[in-house]
Length: 89
Figure 1 (cartoon, rainbow, N blue to C red):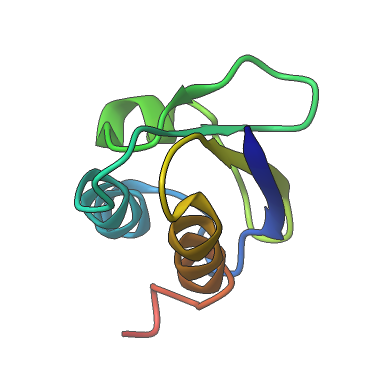
Figure 2: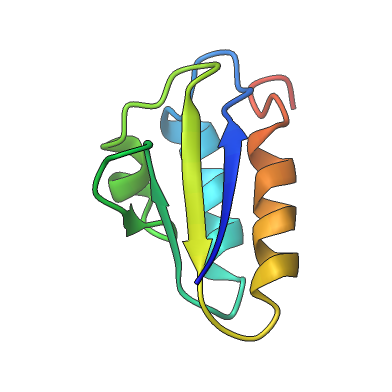
């Protein structure tokens, strides 16, 4: 299992729009990806509703995990996405 930790950069946290963009990218990754707050239960990163249940705010740390081919590259790209202010786009 490959893991990465990232800080949420979107000004309003992972609310509807940023969560939707993130979940869409996770769903297109080709491998199952999970997201959780540190110490919390991982949820399906490709589900916008599950991502929103994390109630992650700007600056909150989240842990991404994936297993499978190219997990490193997939997680690196998702970390980059989370570390971008998706509210500004």
